[in-house]
Image (cartoon, rainbow, N blue to C red; front, top):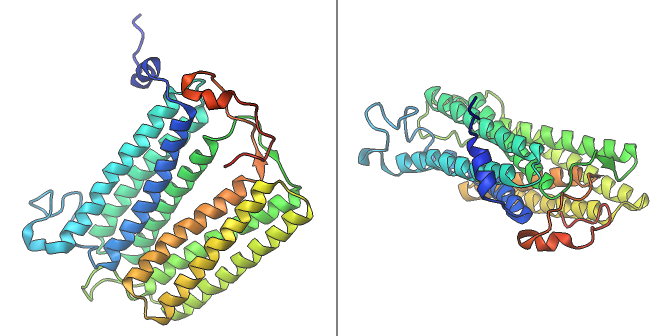
Length: 331
């Protein structure tokens, strides 16, 4: 019986990427995940959400925007095209992870998870357009993009560590505190989507765009309250890590998170007290991505899975060096 040919196996038989290449491909997925969030925000902030009034084509008669649609059509269509760039980047990461020896199934699974999240979010984006920018669907669209970013960060982190069973670097109560930080940040992001859905930037100049029937200033105050909670948990976690003499890496990650939170707080206050200028709102969306990435890196730094598999050779000559102590990785 003839052997079934697997295209990924054919590539693996002919190409052996370095561990560094796989890690950089995973990092590229993170970068593209941030770009998708920020450019999606730009579509809303330039009132281009219905620049292409239908989906999957731009108009009923044209796949691409027509001259009559102006800059709004170009902006919306460009954001749609970036999805294909994202697919290409994730595809490279999947192929590289599959071709890398020894094979690490967890990395390819994380790559495929990103692919299916992209596909599902593309459908959600189409529903967003077809429902006239329904704010609840818009919020779901953003949360799906955040889920994609989450998986990308996990893949990036996993590409730099081994496949041993996770070993906590701190006591269980400290890990539980990090879980509370993750949950609080998740709620912070959820409340942020409600601020967006009830705020003044509806995504289209039409007055018919439905908004969440809440006072956006009151919801913003709730959002700020959760910012204080996240900042408080971050400071508490730093003191706890110092008290238990945790490895240097988790403490450094917490300091990085605190710095990002402070920057995001400044942007948030400038946004609020200047009637939400579009450029500042866009910077705030970028900052929200950085905050979430920093929180995930704090959480992931509190456990160790050993060194990544070593394959000595010209492509990975740096890997043949003595292994670093647990918790000392540059990740």
